[in-house]
Image 1: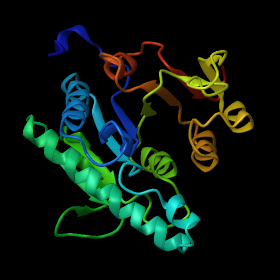
Image 2 (image 1 turned 90 degrees about the vertical axis):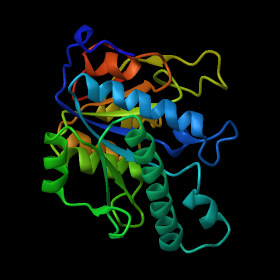
Image 3 (image 1 turned 120 degrees about the vertical axis):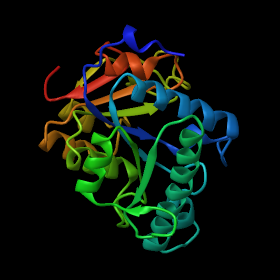
Image 4 (image 1 turned 120 degrees about the horizontal axis):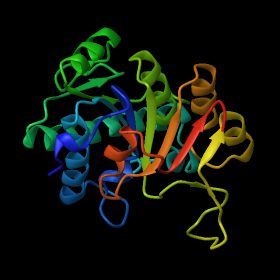
Length: 245
């Protein structure tokens, strides 16, 4: 249990981008109860130090649109299936958070009122002001846009001070560190460098949107102890993507 008094947040409001794999079992698919519980605990720790937290979650553990497209599926259909899969993950994370005492709301870009609220910007902000965690499902509600782009868009809409992308690696590298032992860690990048190097921080639309609105992106390892709390308290971890180095 984190002692709240030990941490002083640098940010009042953040948007956390999670891949669906964060909830997955070892093989990268489905929803693993223990991993789900770990993610919920990480989120609770951040909420408990007074940070308002919105989350956009992907669905790679359930469905990847590109796989359907590769087999001849219509792009719009494949993307809409992915959006629905993100709602499954959002509901699972909501349940895990509520079970540990974190009041949570799920909002979706595609209306499905029997299971979640429709995404309404001012309502989302009001939830955040009341210290509720807001999980935003169904991406932007439009095909051809990734959940990275949805995260950038929602971060701007709710006036988040930073977009934190939590992954399974500790930072951005100039090559895949799991393949290339000589891969170099990149602690700071400008938006233009991230676009030119194609380092896989986020897709180009998301990075461009952050660049146009001067929203910093921080890429960290979700699983390192207290990493997320340390970052929101101002520690220099992972990779920072911003206007200047």
